[in-house]
Amino acid sequence: MILDVKDLTMRFDTKTVFQDLNFSLKEGSMTALLGPNGTGKTTLINILMKLLVPTSGSFKFGDQVRLGYVPQFRNIDAEYPLSIKSFIGLNAPLIKTSKIKAQIKHELEETHLLEIQNTRMGEASGGQKQRAYLAQALLDHPNMIILDEATASLDPVAKEDLMKLIQHLNKEHGMTVLFVTHDVPLARKYMDEYLYLNHQTIKQGKMSEFEGDYE
Image (cartoon, rainbow, N blue to C red):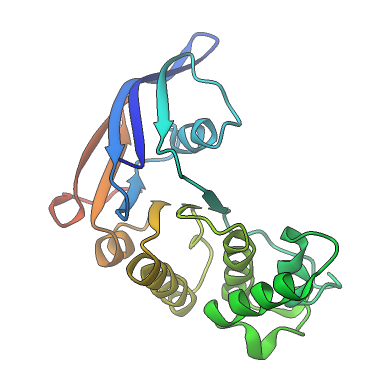
């Protein structure tokens, strides 16, 4: 197992967000974290990222886990001066050795951004910006990646482009994926498993067997 969650409970003052969550993720799995707004998906991710401490319970990653994170689309100002290449390089050491430069180039290639590497981030499309965030995350050599509503606000073509890249990383590099989303059709197309968080509890199953949609 790459992640094992046991009896995880989170309360804020008198409000219980969720309680006694139990689930595990296998190495190399593709899992959608689904659930209506306000059910605690972001809280759960923040706990896994060690940004919040749960009220009770525990979680454990596998010994060799290197976690990557791609956030929800952030609107970068049109005047933002850094190029796509320089933006990706923000996640690398300040002194760019030939090895680091080669890695940045590799991630530009892998995320299909090499040809537009000198475009300013402020002028890039939403999909290009999200792929730049992905490339940033990949500089840390993760073997598990959390996509936190990473396709929200993207047009349909950009969504497909990003998910095909994620699928490639999973199939070619064995990367474990946890994809937080409201887009059930997209999850059905690309994910194998689901976690459904609602009414303070969680259900796990095959994405092909997930029933219904929700807003």
